[in-house]
Image (cartoon, rainbow, N blue to C red; front, side, top):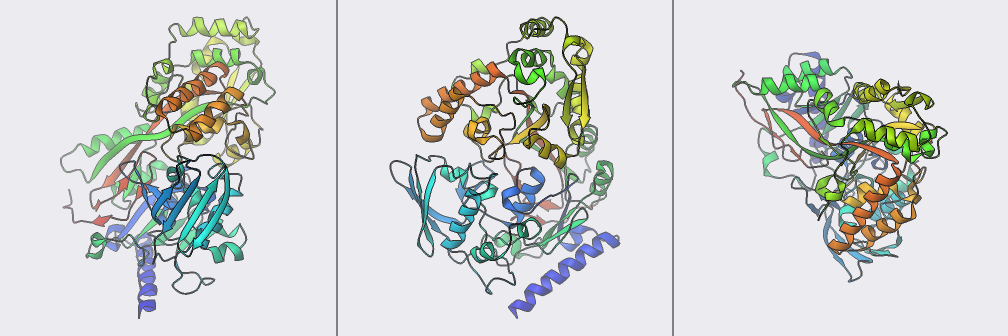
Length: 534
């Protein structure tokens, strides 16, 4: 009877998706939380959850031993308790019992979480170049018994509980890890999360019914207004997606286009508005990066990079192009929320932009901007307009700078391979920590071993990062952050642009959606309410 009930739910949910796409019936009438992902989803493998679209998809279906909640606190997830020794080198974690994995033909019926799942998942992540940094220094993982593991590190790991919340350390079932090829996980999913994969037609739709055996289900979802599942559509045209939202077909609309944002903000102010505005700080640093191993003179001259940086009027571009969404970063790469103590030395002291720029230009060996060889800034389509406005002061002064727009996936590959000299990029924090943000500049994390796409290597910075990795003293960590920032200001491997903010519009029929400063969504408590039509 239980088996029939599960398949009956899937069948009804799938029929609901068909009705949503082929009739006037609204997703809410089917109990479906439908949203649009205009940038697309490239992988369901937790190891590739490196952009927001992939992160959302992964976190619907997978979980880690800990998680970041909506109050930005690290709380227990699949771990039930933890302990560590006085050195922070040995950690012991007790796992929850009775946690079910999603059904899979290759798994025993009713397969539940055990220590081997954690051990195999962690070794899988440790041996992958994208995620090796998370468990750096891990010497041994021991399965003490069926629901207890111990981790031994060669150096203190004070931030381990936060690191365990990174999506790449989501837990997969050990039998599948052993049996299927690595490519399996890109298009298939089998986790312990609140939603399970039923269907994914790339570029078209994704169907994720509620996992009825999910351990964190609560009383909110047991009533008649419970959510039956999540669905994702992939419409690239934002105006079309906006219309879908206004018609009540989408549960949320993620703000991205300034013009659309302003239109929706004004509509939300109306007394009979059918949706609300949700916003907050997003731990995402947007920046321009230089490939310090590149061939262009800008790759070899910090003075030339400083000249370019001095001319930028980032607050103006944010105001005019992004509608004021985001905080100009000045010279800081790490968001203020992750810095503590006296950070006054991080302020931007530029007074006369042009005078400072020309001074650095002469130190770089050029008398006029026109003498600098042509420079190409690579970006993806989503940031083409922003970057066009950004480079305007350079072009006005006589620099020969042009924009080249490349599809996101292609650009990421080119940047990782060191094939471009100058590029726009972003770093979304994996967990709320200065170490996580500043750690991308560590010397041993240049591609293919990590996200140090600038190929910046500096012994002083590495030593300060080691302090952040191993010390718990607040003063030691503050001084280390200042040292790292000073090295970045001196050598300019990047030009920080702004610290992001998230803006989301939510239909009032849906209540209970939670988010945090990483813009991760938690839909476990989402339920539907009746709202009078405007």
